[in-house]
Image (cartoon, rainbow, N blue to C red):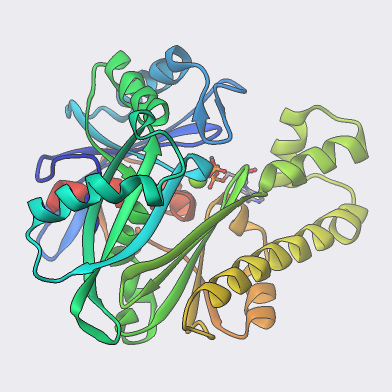
Length: 354
Ligand SMILES: Nc1ncnc2c1ncn2[C@@H]1O[C@H](COP(=O)(O)OP(=O)(O)OP(=O)(O)O)[C@@H](O)[C@H]1O
Ligand SMILES: [Mg+2]
């Protein structure tokens, strides 16, 4: 399991710094499951995060501070994630006989072959995924790198809010961690299965393919709910805020469904289709067993059915909170209602128990 850019085994808040919000989750162990101790979603000012990059550290820091206050958490440590085009991952076969420090030494020498940036400009880390298929003498090592600036601005934003970022993960690995909370939804608990977790957010659609619960592929594309909101805005001549509100809560004319929503749903299906084709082209797999839909935009009615028909794989909505206990002070219906958009936060919060 990839533990990137950080130390483990400290209780951490999971903080997803998304393009429009801070999403915070704190978990504790509760018998054989977990309990959600704190939870908050706090909107961010427009353009404080652009293309997954923090443009305004102060605004993001203040957003985190508000989320912490609202949630009532006492924790001062957190886990955050980087993603998008600034993150590079490569799977590299290496001799199975090398120790961790020998691997680190060899990667230091070879990293520039795999990372198309000046090594001075990146932070990178590696972890062993498992034996290389068809070669017992080798193991697949996952090398992950992110531009320094991208990592450092996240850490600084947390510091501004009085938090220490103990872990800087990669979103795909946060999704991998969260899979523990999704297994109950899948046939055979997802064991041995190839499962695509598809996160359709505000600006990004991301696919993370897991085999037996381990990440084997990840890719994202600029596409998301923002496009739909902008379309509504243009068509009905209303503000972005009003379009966003009517999109999520209703109140748009009848022609919205046929002329805007149906084509958008079809776009989601096509974007996902492309991502699946990229996966098939780059791996030895040519089929997916299950698709799990996550992200706020997946809440659009009928998306799961449309995806299922197109991809020919059983498709479900992510319900990561279904089996969790919830602290009394949290409004449980709200938490469960937003659960599909909290996968990254949950995956990060689970780093507390590595
Ligand atoms: N019921 C709904 N119907 C349609 N769209 C919805 C609904 N609920 C939320 N959304 C949309 O989901 C998006 C937010 O989803 P999410 O919280 O997963 O995104 P994000 O993580 O902030 O974005 P990104 O991952 O792209 O940075 C917004 O575009 C919002 O309008
Ligand atoms: Mg997101």
